[in-house]
Length: 83
Image 1 (cartoon, one colour):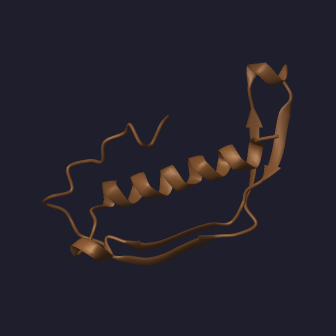
Image 2: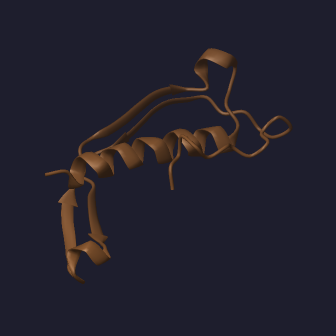
């Protein structure tokens, strides 16, 4: 899934959230793919830090928050599995 292509759910009527900081440290992932011939790849994730979600516009809906978190996670997974 490509988070940049995903559209957040309609958040206009729902709650608005302001998140100052999300920090994920020492994350680990396990990736399995046909290209790995049935094997799995374990990798350490780089530190993920996201600041000020929804701060500049008085809050973000849950769909927008989820979209930002998934996008950051996808980027970290790509970095963690590169090389």
